[in-house]
Amino acid sequence: MPTMADPFSGNIKRKISKVELIQALRVDIASELEAIYLYDAHAHATDDPLAKKVLMDIRDEEKEHVGELMTLMRYLDPELTKHLMSGEEEVKEMMADLGIVEPSIDSIASVGSLLDDEE
Ligand SMILES: [Fe+2]
Image (cartoon, rainbow, N blue to C red; front, side, top):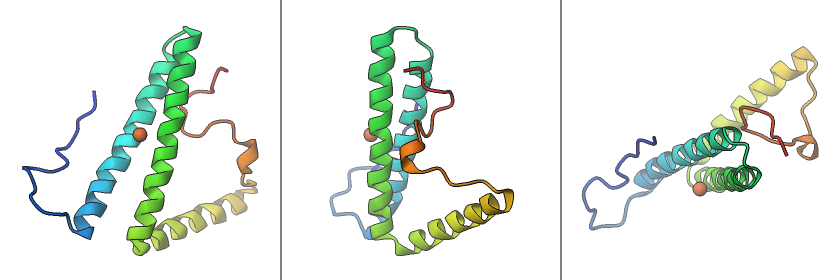
């Protein structure tokens, strides 16, 4: 079961600062990732084709939410973008060292699933 943090401990009677917004977005992103994990697990735990299809569809919508929130985070926190790009470059260097070719977007069937999608 999700353990949800109180997004606003107490009732804040003011607008939140940019730093607080960034902190809140981190919790939002974690919640979306947890939702992906749960929907994916539940989809793979059932043989009902409709339930599986609906759960996987919702799971994929949650992935889009992660993308939206990460884009918003990069807008609000340019320093984060530098770290993300640095990490991406490190992995790309490791891939190049191992001769791994980065998959194209079109060739990716599913990202974030623990198991292969059975569609
Ligand atoms: Fe979501």
